Image (cartoon, rainbow, N blue to C red; front, side, top):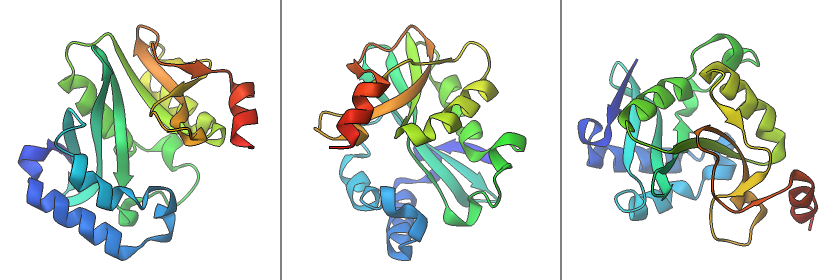
Length: 185
């Protein structure tokens, strides 16, 4: 497996792959289905660089880096696994090097100068998975104690759990108990 950038992968190929994933209408894509039509509109303007994990030139996964403020970057933004490469059993992320781990390594290497890098996930139910990623990445990564706001919409999905490396994240945050109340409205 190899991680390559958008220039190496090809912009047209990326756009074509998005169309294929949208047409497949995979049931596991319910949460991300709107990405396939939205990403072509914003992929050049909102993100620092796109990364693609390929296996014998077959797209396995992709993700990008998003800058939130000077020196603060979110890794694994818009992460998507090709449905043919998704995990098939519960221990996959505990025993194998996941596509996300390949992408994180390349993204962190790409960002040689940062104050903070973070990875976030929607919903409290995914916090244990995020903590497993944190443990795999090493003791310098920390779990942010609150939910951070990752978009400007009035939506519970904009408040996410996060792990970070470097300086603490300087984004609006709310306690987990406050988020829990808000998410039930």
